[in-house]
Structure formats: C-alpha cells, structure tokens
Image (tube, rainbow, N blue to C red):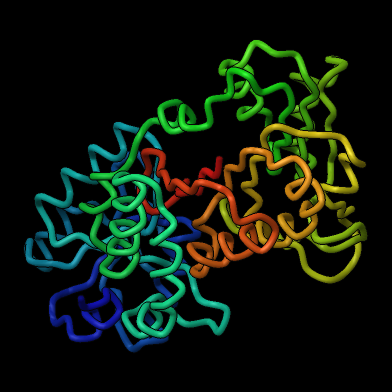
Length: 344
C-alpha cells in the first residue's frame, strides 16, 4: 500500500491546503521540506475575512477553482469532533481528491510510511494478536491505513460515540477512578454518569487554565481529589512544552511538578485508570506499575500521540501484568484522534 508521502511526491496537480491553523502550518512545512509546493490556502467562508496565512492570501474554494480548475489535490490541515464539520469534510471528499495527512513524526523525525510500518511489523503484529474482538481489529488496521494513505474513508468506518465505547469498561461496580489528563473535568462527568458509587476520584491536570475550570466544578466535593501537576515515572519537576491542542509534553527542566501514579495513590486501591496525557502515557504506566500489579485496575490508554503507541503501550502494560484482555476503540473524529486501548 502506497503511503501518502510517497504519493504526493509524484503528484503533478496543484496542491491546496484547506485550513489555517497549527496543523496547516505544520503540513505546509512538511511539504516544503520534501520539495512540494503549496499553491494556495483555503478555508470555510466563516474563517476567510480577507485573511492571509504564511504569506498567502486565503481564498475560497470557488476562487481556487477559477484559477486552477476542479482537478486539484486538497489537503486538510485541521480536524474536528463536530458532526456538522465531519459532514462538511465528507462533502469536500466527493468534490475533490482529498487527503488528511498524518502529521505525527517518529522518534527519529520520520513521517509515517510503508518503510516505518515494515520496520516495526513484528511489533504491530504482536499488538494485533492481542485484540479480543472484530471491532478492535478493524480500529487497529483501518486507523493504520488512514495514517499511511491519508484517506478519511477508513476512519469513517470505525468511529463510535464515546459513551458506547466506554460500555466495554462495565463501570457499574467501580468505586474509584484515576483520571490522568482530566482537562476540565469532562471525563469525571462521564465516569459519574456510568456509576452510582461515591468512591474516590483523582483528577490530574497540568494546565492551570483547565485545572481551574475543573476545580470550579468539583473542588468542593470531599471524594474528588484534584492535582495541578503532570504524571511521570517518578516524582520530580520538569518543564511543560506546550504544543497546540494535542501535543504538550514534559521535558527536563523546572516549572511543572511531576508525580507518579503510585506516589499519588500511596498504596490505595483504584478500579479504573484513564490516561490521555499527550504522549507521556508510557512513562505514567511505569510510574503506576505497583498499583497496576497489585490491583489490576481497568485501563483506558490513549494511543494516538506517538507513532509507536500501538505497540509500546501494550508492551509496557504486559511487562507489569500479562492477564489483561485488550480492546481498541476510536471515538468519532477526523483525523485519528481519540483512538485508545481498553484493558479489562
């Protein structure tokens, strides 16, 4: 299967980026590094307003068609969970040859390609072999197909509502929840709608703005314990590098308090751990190995922040305990956001 990045190098038609945010900027420079010229930027009418972006005047698609014709390559430089936006994207895919390129780079700064997939094929095959149902296998294979080809059609087949995916966890009997990457408390709300128990809830969020919103919602409840810090392998301090939307990470330095899951819980049991912490999930699992080994909590682990998440996260969990059943699910979104492992 040919990768998007191999295909686009051979493309002779005009290349247009649809979007004017951080993802569009990253896409522009990835193309430029490979000698591929972007001919124009476009956006929905509500974002135009006589704007310029990276030195280009942002044009409506109608004007681009007048200049280049309708036979263009349209590259999406944004994403969304919104149903109406996804419907709009699907509509564009029927009018144009549309791609939504994967923008994640490997640890060695490579784009995701057939060569990367072939090089790590044994790890991917091992992870795939652990999956317990057909939908999990579809999520795994079709999300990789999207990342490789840039096509949106594979993702449209596998997205499910978050509430439906959470039913796998069977939280009715759960009495305690550890929320790593709690954002503004939205996941705590979903958790509480799934269980009537009043056990301890731990909300961990390094962004002070998001933490403040969560504290406004839940700060007065005795059984909810909120921490404005980052999760890691061990207690310490680091520097939070702010990405844009889905790319924060903790580097060496000072300014952000770091604690491990084991340190926060201090021997207390927990029934369910969720980790969505911008690519630091593997480190957090290492920092929670005593809790995981002792109590075998249910796990929901985001697997879309790093190219190797599909297998490295399972390797880490299975190094602690190898008796989990493994499922993979994806919420409704474009591109490959909110893809995660559910381990029970």
